[in-house]
Image (cartoon, rainbow, N blue to C red; front, top):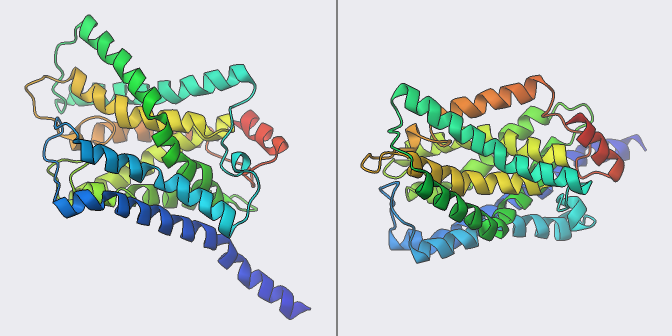
Length: 314
């Protein structure tokens, strides 16, 4: 009997890691497959103001569905979990009014971080702030909100994988000792998933991989706890989806919209993907950590009781 128990304990880590490892394999294979037409074509992005081609848009859209597809396949075929809406936190935050506030937070928090990053960049001379005019800015804001709304399915494709599946599985522990490794591992996995686009100058145009990859590791590891906090405080992946959509669309657009139109834009020194953004995001993450807002219950896939406990803690 003792030998059987010992064997069971020894197999537990294998079972715990099987799902995440399969998930990461599928998500990365999906990314590389989706980006293969651009890689084969030798595509390189050298200017931050460069418009995205139609082929690149299609490849990016296909790649963004890979994490969600991987999470669903692992849930169904490897872990044989329950309902997807529970396993991946694919639900509207409750009650309804709280859900609206949570979704607004998903937009307001990255907007505030972007403003802080641009302020830091302007104050230090790293960001070439231009003249802002009300009418063009209002038109840009309206079109950007529409762009976010239209692109939400794509960002569900990513966050159902990272926030809905991977982070909660890595963070499960009886004593909370896996929480910091879960944040770091998920952030690194999230960053390295972007490797094909980094090799083509996607996030850091004109930069070699040995600069862009470490920069992306810093960016993703810092922003991931913010997305996680939004997901935990609401019990839903939706606010994290909105935040990710804002960071990847509106935040990048704000850097271009507010800049001097004749200046060269370098994402390594501007916005949330550069050091001003790292400072702003690190300050928020430090505050969230020190005030206990990044903690989570033992089982984040959660029964209704555990969801309500999480919401009260957040």
